[in-house]
Image 1 (cartoon, rainbow, N blue to C red):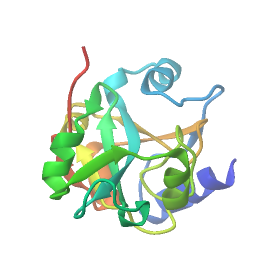
Image 2: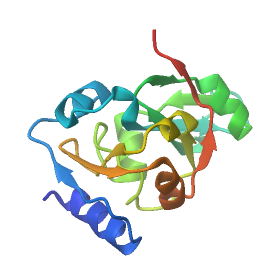
Image 3: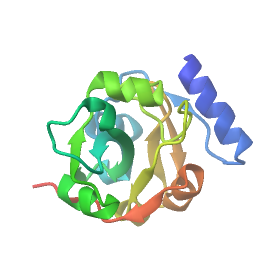
Image 4: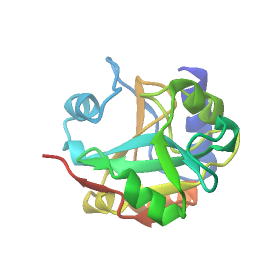
Length: 169
């Protein structure tokens, strides 16, 4: 098992979760790819999306003023960054670069887990995930996932339940 996935598995066990990390035969870098391999609805996939947030200052201010936020959104949604900005009281919310994501999570895009980061990241959890008894989240590597629930995601991450997206067309 990849070291990132091992760390996530160890944290899940330490938090008393019943779900275990599962290795997939193919990469699950998208919600659609994960859902196809798991045989579930795309809405039951918890996309872990990292955004760069600026709470004050002009948009042209240095990147050092950017802070990460993790949005765990249903695979049936696209994140509405304007909603996220309002929820966070931010002046700007933009999709993070791969380098920013790895620097703050220690994990690659397409495999970012909701936990196991070098330091805690403020987290919003899409309320739409609560429509599914089982939710699948990445486990630190694009080939790994674990089953959980909306309530457990909120507990594991200390995240805030929120309306973060719009239905996909």
